[in-house]
Length: 283
Ligand SMILES: [Zn+2]
Image (cartoon, rainbow, N blue to C red; front, side, top):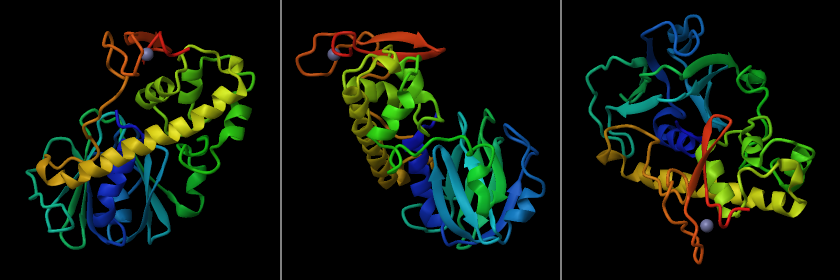
């Protein structure tokens, strides 16, 4: 499932073919994904110019010249494919239409953008740009983890008295937006914090340490995603799914990578999701 760095990578991959470009023709091949598409979506997209391509949490927001913003969520398996034209580094020929190509946008300049989603947990919606932040998918989201609003003082305040484990608190999108299971595991390992620690029991100093760790882990992953874009020609035309080297996620039974630590990575299930951590150095 794409997390924030993957979505940011997709956004950066789409930038050269979408931002400032007109959607010459949009096609919508089914009535819904996770939810129904907005009425007349193809008509409302066709002819619009993408003024800006932003990201909020795990949503890509394409601000259109029509006063509306296209909200894109990749869900579990959503993929963005770029083909045609000779734009930037993207040289893929138009692929044969596939079964799960649900939305197709032909951009000025001959580039084709395809949203393919086999499992259909993804979503697209249109909202007035003026109050896109109050859209039902976005209104409850906490601050961006890489933005200024997310800082030590804020996090200490939000975690005060919270009875839930720190892992669950960090996955709470109202506290911080866009953090997912994989990167929370990585963050907690980086600062030696056990995922089971109750948020309310953590001293200020330890909570404060989370903020730079979150920023670093996400920034490094975004950077890795950026490098993956350079190799885009060699991939099968799919944006945002790149090779990661996780230090703790998915490494059950393997030795801890922290120098001097003799621990073995353990997997436990918290709120139905796997937590990977080192019982030796994460306290
Ligand atoms: Zn360890």
